[in-house]
Length: 104
Image (tube, rainbow, N blue to C red; front, side):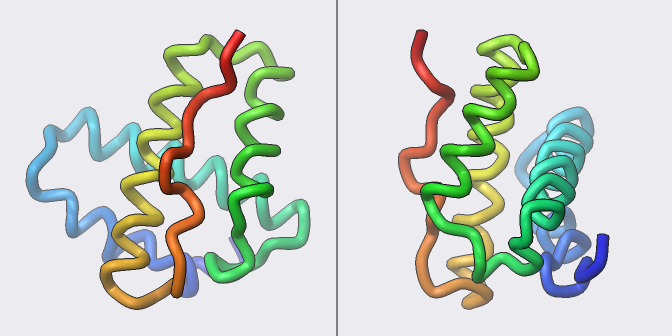
């Protein structure tokens, strides 16, 4: 990904001290997948991500026939990631607050 340092993956993963290794692996994969998708769509840094983009991503996952449980996990990963970015001052607002898998 073009701006890995802007997305602060390594620091985020290092902050995950209260979860198991499988959760760390899932969070890394989920966030990496989202970043790749968003960069292809023109959002090359966390500050460019808004709630509408995150909702489009959730809808995209649905069209790709991901299981609802998988989409819910990806939403949880993104909530944790953007919450962390907000806490460390990398973004002004957390666009993932209350982000959930689409119903239905």
